[in-house]
Length: 222
Image (cartoon, rainbow, N blue to C red; front, side, top):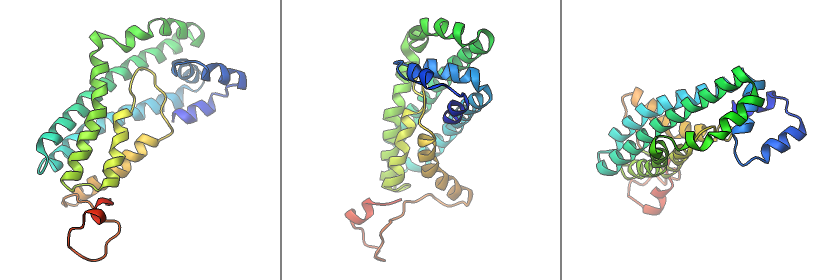
């Protein structure tokens, strides 16, 4: 949605060059919101809904994977949930910035917001910053727990890792759907299995019909 909003903003080549040259994505996002508020708001709303959905998803994944790796699963899910809470704080700051743009316009709101960008990004004794960094380690730990419990194969475990990098900070630009697509590929099959009252299990991609455990063959699983 951010990408669609940027395309709908009709920025001139010179404006794009000036905004892309900035060290932060905030000026670009504020200008885009002023010109395409509906698409911009839709994109950030989807990100908010995704964060809300990830919290119960991490709790459920922790319960599934804790059978063989309880400590790693609980620590990973705990770090992820705390980090997702920090993401909610950042989205509140983003919403405030967009409200300033709607009331004052990008010309007045952008310098006003950027002057206090550091104080907002590192507010409350840097607690949100520290918690948001925990999602990087948390996504790694929950992926390890899922692999050790054989709930997910190696490929889907790798797809969990981008979750640790989603929305880190105030007004951050995201690649078009990459993180969300990875998480959907990793977690949606688990949800479908649970709805069918089945335990999520990894599957070997290249099976030779043998039930004998083969580490190299079992390594590449879904």
